Image (cartoon, rainbow, N blue to C red; front, side, top):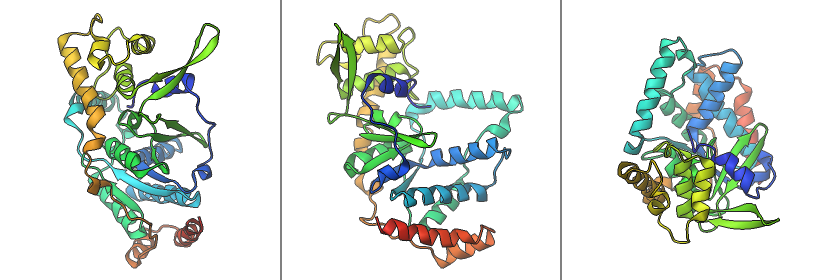
Length: 325
């Protein structure tokens, strides 16, 4: 789901660089939300008149996306979701209820959830190509944020929403049509926004704790916000709070900020604050340098799966291009 309205808030209130072409990220490492790639591919297939693309086509979609990254000089690292956090129990229940309603209306063919078999096959293909992948111990967003934080300035999260910013990822790339936007945090893990006051533009710093508070109040996967506090009110609460005000104190006194609401808010805030730091280093370890190749077993798989013969030739050409970066 992402953080409701966060992208618009950042675009409207911060100084973002221009949208880029994929090749402008040459030399970068992208930690990729694998479910995003699958979702984008399945959606494209559905729009093209194929409501239920088979697993082979979905694997081929991952392969084609990998070509695009390598041809642009980008090292892709695919990250797979683990079990959902207990913090997400409420939203999972809500989504399941909505799914049942869609099924009842005959819309089940539009639902997409990758099977364990599909994930295993994709991991096999990536391994046989020498492409890095990581199995997250829980949500991929958290592991991607941790990898991006620890990977240095050439590391980016690649996703379709901005949850990873809330988990502390300093750079998140989001595709917008044929272009790509980069959303960034400042050095302290917050954001700098521009406000028009007294006839001039004033830069105001939203600290990391304040940024997390803002995201929760916008509404996220762990808490739908607080009734009566919309984006404008949330922004005012943050900007008007004295420096150093605790997150709970910022919302205390609001009409619907009951004891239970503040308790949940505090738990969610702590989760966003600490989750990425708890990811073990071994989980996000990848080789210093990639070693792309194509194995005999994958060659046989591609042939038996009736993938076009030029796929192998294209892969070899793509790897040669990447190695020249």
